[in-house]
Every structure is written in structure tokens, then in C-alpha cells.
Length: 318
Image 1 (cartoon, rainbow, N blue to C red):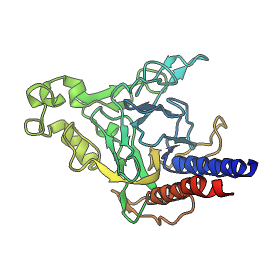
Image 2: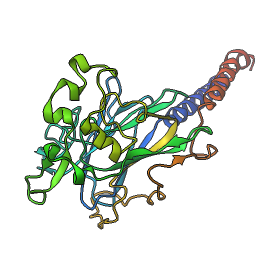
Image 3: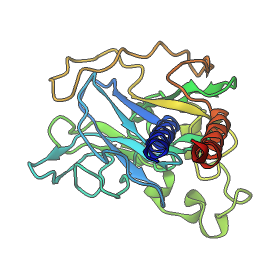
Image 4: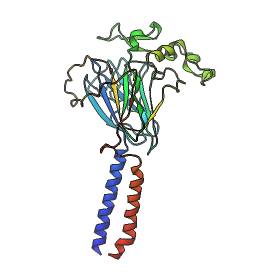
């Protein structure tokens, strides 16, 4: 009979539409905002076994923002490059955060010193793990704010909003050498990069949390940015868990020197609400229609089972 086949096809189509919507809803969105009074060039790097984000490197002018959607379970890093020049083919260099001399990083990581946002997105209802790290040094202040939080749990904003470049010890300073950057401190190295010793790098006999302790230099980073990683084993106060639909990543969050965008990218979304510092906890209502909660996976499986039973038992009787 033709009718059962038609009904079966429609039900199967509905099943796959529902599956697609659910899969998309469990993805996470990174909203990257440039609040600095100059252009930056964000870079992204996917961890092993996860696909690259839609863009691995691009220019973001002052006052502009972009959204990048990740695959479920994505892990990786996001950072900002400064002082970049690229030719028409995307070849060039950056004063800080360079990733192989290309506009699109294409699997290359950030050259230190660079402020890093790191995240592993939990599969299903598992928690996300995220942090802001100064282990590879510092180049820009940044704030990370979870949004669209699943469930009733509160999530923490984190980041490093202090301009460490202004107080960077001379032996750690990176001084700009291009026009517009000459003589100014554009980055602050980690002690590991500056001196290369096992003690500062937490390597060799210091490759464990017992022997690798905070140093004079890592303490400078920690005092300036108490929730950011200051050295390799700084886990206790630097790693956070959450289950969020979206993460706002704001560079130069306390800057009030926004210049008018030049139109290279679409106009930015409305600015995020003001953030209390040093940090405030964020709790959002999980009833938003734009968020599908993890417990709905169970509902999805139940509906799928009913569809299956209907197709196998009921349709042959029509």
C-alpha cells in the first residue's frame, strides 16, 4: 500500500528534523567582542579529535563582534593577536599571538606571550571545563562570561581584566618594533619563556605540583589576575565548570575608548551588561525558548521510541 509508505516517510523526516534541531541546540556559541581601541586578529585552535571552528583567524575592528558556533564536545583555544599586517593572500605577521604568519591559523597555535581562553565542552549533560591562562604569558586583558546557562547552577565569569603590560618586570617585557608600537610594551613573557629553566617551566624534576611551586614572577600574574592560570599547576583557583549555551569572550573589557567600526564586519550586537569585578557569579533562567536543556535528550529518545513502535506495529495494519 502507498499510504503507509508516505506516512512512514513523513514520520522519518520529522524524526531526522528533530534530531538535527537537538544536535544544533547542544552546540556552543562563542561571541568574540573587540572592546579595544584598535583592531585585533582573533585566532582559534581546535584540540585533538575536534573539528576547527568556522574561522581559525580573522580581523576584528574596534567595537565589533562575531559569533562562532562549535561542534558538540569541542575543545580548544581562542586568543587575540595584535599589530598584524597581512597581504592579499593572508600571509604576514603579528606583533603578539602570531600563528605561523597567516591570517587563518589553520592548526597553528599562538606564539607566546599570549592571553588564552581554553575550554572543553562537555558532551550531553556533562559540564564544560574552561579557564583563562597566562601560562604562555600575556598580551591583552580579556573577560569570559558564560550565558544561557543550563539548569539552576550558577556559572563564574573569569578572565584577566588588568593591563599587566603596564606593570610587567623589565626582564619579561616584549617591546614593539613596528610603527605605532615602537618602544611600547606589547606583551609580558612568562618566566618559563624568558629564562627557560625547569623550575619556571615545571619540567624535569619540577614536573609535578609538589616540586613546582609559585615563583616570584607567577605571583605577579596571580595578584593581577587572581582567577587566571599563572603557572602550570595553578588548577585550584583557575579552572571552572559550567554548562552554558554561549560564552562571551571580550577583549579589553574595561576600555572606554571604542572607535567607530569601519564596516568590514556586520555591526556588533548590543553590548553585554556591565560586569562587577573582580568577578560576579552569573545565574540565568533556563526556561528560555532558545535553549534546549540536557534533560530533553531523554524526551527525544522517548519520542524516537514511540515513532519506531508506531512504524513497526501500527502502519502494517493500515
